[in-house]
Length: 210
Ligand code: SAH
Image (cartoon, rainbow, N blue to C red; front, side, top):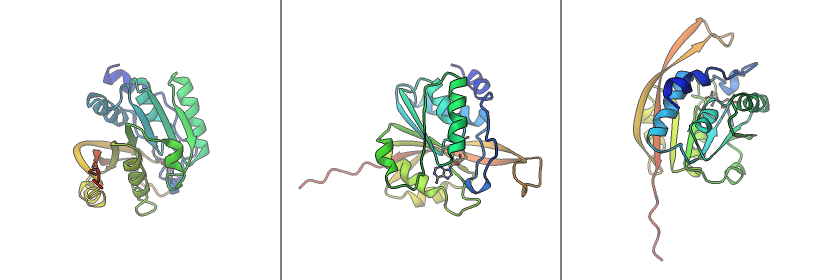
């Protein structure tokens, strides 16, 4: 599937019916989602891979990964309503994705998810709850050797410091996230936020020799 075709397909995905500000429910716009997915595809991180989408929302990233030939895809979100919409979106686009309800802070979740090859995610940026992105990063690093995540532009240094000794940022791709007026505290009809897609590689711990 070509980039433009993927983008057009992902445009058909239904968004949050009543987005919840506390959960920072902003659907990734199709062009940005397609960009992240295509980049990961070209790096060999999607096709034939076991992929996990943390905070999958209405499913755009997970569904895109399935359409690009992932071996299996699981999406997890703490909002059961979003999970329902994601299921409907996957059915609409005939994408084989498993969506489950779960909180990234639940210590039992890693076992439920198992290990995977690639995590893709657009976590809350922490605008409502400081450091809301941290449990996403921690979980991603613990379940997958490679993670693609969208952050506010300028976050690289923070992420680098936060993941020190656990992961390395080996790529950064810039993008824009047009945010339409969604919540009452929004003052503009549309606002473009500069973002960056980071590729994080888990640092392999050397095996200890007894
Ligand atoms: N990945 C989707 C949604 C991004 S919005 C997309 O790209 O369009 C961020 C998502 O994270 C929301 O769907 C929100 O419900 C979810 N979320 C926020 N806190 C969470 C948590 N603690 N555990 C699981 N999901 C969470």
